[in-house]
Length: 131
Image (cartoon, rainbow, N blue to C red):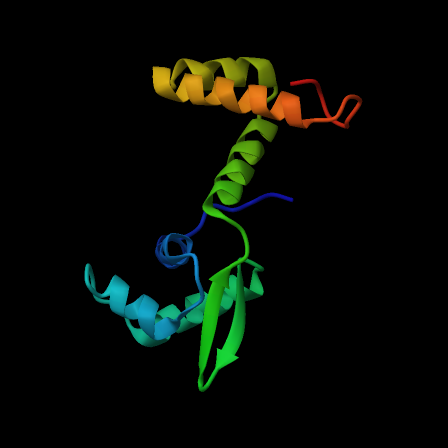
């Protein structure tokens, strides 16, 4: 399944829910966004409902308000975007090489650590290609 990059307001809503790591009402989200720029309550309510219908958020009624919470972590979202980008490539090896060439030394080290961790966690004979 392809993951579409979030729109500007979708990303602002998700950023807050990812940062807070707890359910939040539309009012809380609006108040926080309004510290930087003005946005209408109904606009945020509509976009939160769209994110809910797309499967990005769960919601639970609390009194008269819906409490929204992220279904996936920011890291899962980012990884899915990266996987989609890699899937568009005709030469995955070359694409990965170009990606690594653009990374900082610290990011290359972090990638190396992640690969070592993935290798040690993956059972022998597990599906997918060798790491």
